[in-house]
Length: 214
Image (tube, rainbow, N blue to C red; front, side, top):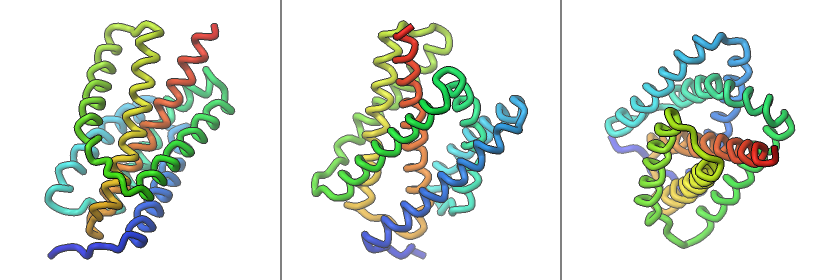
């Protein structure tokens, strides 16, 4: 049976309320991560990866549901803790909060532009996919061969641009094309991943600037 197509106002309200809940759940996961041993966090990283692929697979056939999204975001919060802990030690707690604020502002501005303009950002889809693949390949290379400071800066700036672009793309497509009620959890999950990855790249950018001052 086809899901009900929501009105634009109702759709945005449902999606952004779901995103708010997912971020609250992720924050709870971060708190829980402080008490978990590294082996458990590592295992949950694998679970998180499996869940992402499962969500992509299931979405083509059936709705994933908000409970799935809440579970994923909690696990994601747990696995975010090592990165947050690292940057807290390197940059300080105030810098991490600043990165979170910068990410939130960038996300909200991009979402506002995408939702209020008549301009169609769907042309970004192909470029963003290429950028995402490039980030994954460069990240794999960096695992074996450390980047120079210049390459690291370029990599990080591309990451910020790609995920700001994904916010524009996802919100604009949501507003212009709409989705059925059953697809709301998938949209929430997509926007959550956009925000988290943007936050991580903003943190990385601040870390690059910090290392350049030394």
